[in-house]
Length: 239
Image (tube, rainbow, N blue to C red; front, side, top):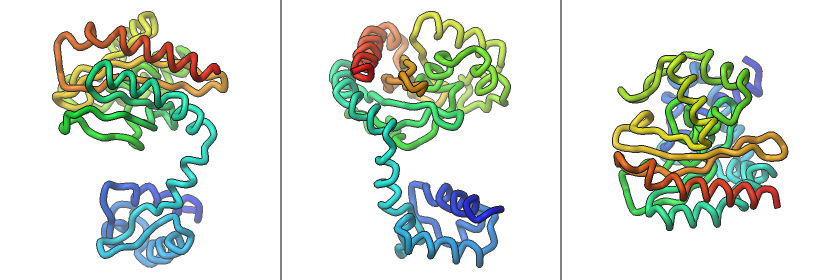
């Protein structure tokens, strides 16, 4: 493994919700302890990692670097008023995702009062079982959709996850036709979502959506607010 690959592997492992000890990083990455020790402390010197009593964690320098991405900044600035309005209208979480490395990367969210809904900003979500993921997948060209979603194994996140490629293909075709994607406990039990996606002028695909507790009428209830949010975001991005 090259030095850049070791660094990225180490940073990926440290991007957990808690600090990791050197022993835990060895188990997580498979890298030799001496290599990890040297790599981690060099990354601490550079500000990319921090060291505390419980081990190593991502440093604030990573936050600075991540927010220097022009596409990320453009989308988040344009989307914040729209996310706020969608959250106000629905009373639940609104979230924003961007296609990155075959996943729906959650780049922002406005939370509701429901504490059981997971806070997933920064999380790469699967395309086949989340609302923002399916909205993004349906916005892809047919061949890209096949490659990213349908030519891979579809791991079940819950008992409701669509894992049959033919069924998912039909599902995504309907999403492409209607412009609206939904996920009903397919990614997390008790949680559903509704989302719509759009393609930016630079080719990036963005999705905005609703996330809330399961409700059999939720698609009907939030379809118009989500469509309106997507239309507003499309206008803001064009401007």
